[in-house]
Length: 277
Image 1 (cartoon, one colour):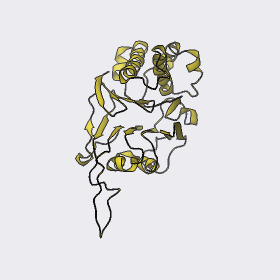
Image 2 (image 1 turned 30 degrees about the horizontal axis):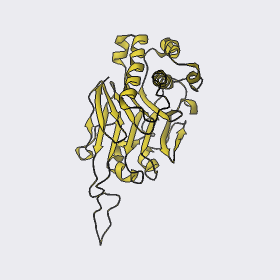
Image 3 (image 1 turned 90 degrees about the horizontal axis):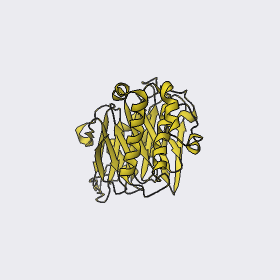
Image 4 (image 1 turned 60 degrees about the vertical axis):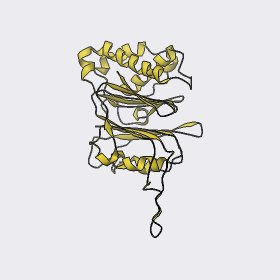
């Protein structure tokens, strides 16, 4: 299946340190998984929202750790696509962007061809014109943006986690209304939505794991080699990493499995709320 990861941290210079313990989970083997058809990254740097999207089937493993370890950023979303709706091309490659918002999605909106028009009726024209591709994921993103717009929070950098959570819940409730409860109950939906200051992630069906770090001791990246062999601690370093559709992490990675039907609302100060969808 597709791979999804999201990262938030409090030190833009320590991405490689914060993600190093999770690096094995950030590799998607394109050679072994022939159904992968694209991959992409979104992150924030110097006040800009940046995208790297590759709409071609990867022939080598997509190693997100190697791709992001030298970035100076607080927030990253990465995605490897196994397409179910829409051909592999740039417009259909995650993450999707609107202004300061980034979004990526693992799963499929049920009966999308039949519910697409109903979903679009909830999206105002100026947002609808931003839809470039054919994927159910991009449409779902714009439904969430529509709920934020209706609440007057689309361009509010101080939007609260509760307001973003309400937009996510509203969009998923609209999918349920359009597709039917039985279909919605059976869908897989792991998504990540961020404006660079807060992050919302869901687990609905697809397995999701969460790592919260309050400090980092004996950093493997910064440790000084022999003969000094000096350990380096980052007492201040805090981070949150979320990964979806991966093999279970080993105990030393310190991930926990997120309960099904959960929405993680992560604030700018890296407080994680676990809410029912």
